[in-house]
Length: 376
Ligand SMILES: *Cc1c(COP(=O)(O)O)cnc(C)c1O
Image (cartoon, rainbow, N blue to C red; front, side, top):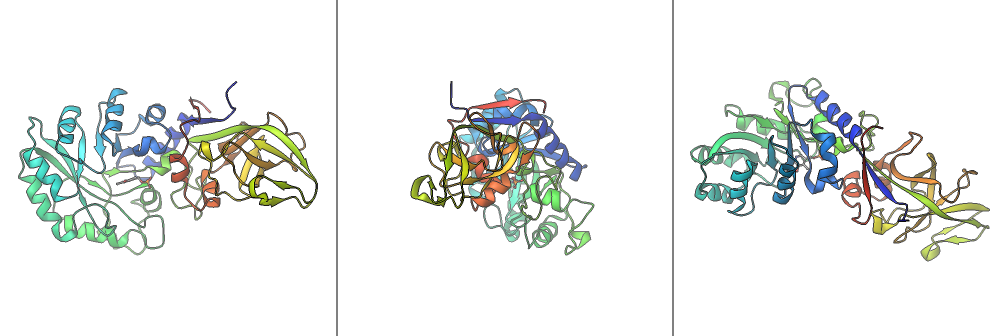
């Protein structure tokens, strides 16, 4: 028998989360962001749950090919555009839409030989200072692109740095609105945080309502996988999002401790009273963060308890004191939904690790078997 660890992808939850994002921006079309192998879930595994999206956005040409191989004929957007000239041949062949964020990409397009002009998303650096043309140079880039026979429609795009936090989106949106005011083309601005926190109906109080730019295409990623973009201000449940992934295992041993007994490497946990612990077949080699301290929440038989001691490569330990009936073979939910329906949000575990749900999803280890559940 294989180790009892298993990740489950919940197609129905992905569908629900996609619908939740759509409801926040009912007039917009939705890019389901599936970069990084669908945030660690697996492109092939999320496809069924996300096929109701209007398009798939990602970074990697190999991932774009995988989406086409699944039979998807609708839009695919390369969020970082092309990296070298020959990537454009694949864009022509597979009908991939691509971001244009720098002069070098316009140079490549200008020398590209194609019968079919490309749909491009021209990216503005409105303050994030990662990819895109500065507001001062944006219109010149648009004019240059617009003159190329290789280019069909130009859409306008930017990305927010602080949609999940204090600063909000008002300043970047104002810059984008001012520079693009009279340019034709569809707009794409909002990631998950901006989609949920700043829907068109509930404008950012600090923004000039006249300067609000609604996305024609929203770009939710983390929300469709069921994690809150702004945890702990909001939880996934607050936003009506359900976990897209459950990581579960079982108890493979129990130990009875006396006061003074320690647990695991470096004896970081010492029992203060008699207690019973369970040893779980899940460790950092499965993608569970080693940095999670004693006290990180975990579900055993769908009941909340805590980890004790260091996470090791293949195992971690949990406190069974509140769970008289639990023992060898009991279900352990590291994050996601237990069999009894109780949910442990990935964001809570991520917070204990000093990181975000994104990183835990993406770090699910290749050795963990994954199944797809349709209805639950
Ligand atoms: C990853 C990404 C998104 C999705 O962000 P989330 O925070 O996961 O919603 C949207 N737009 C761009 C350009 C991205 O790179």
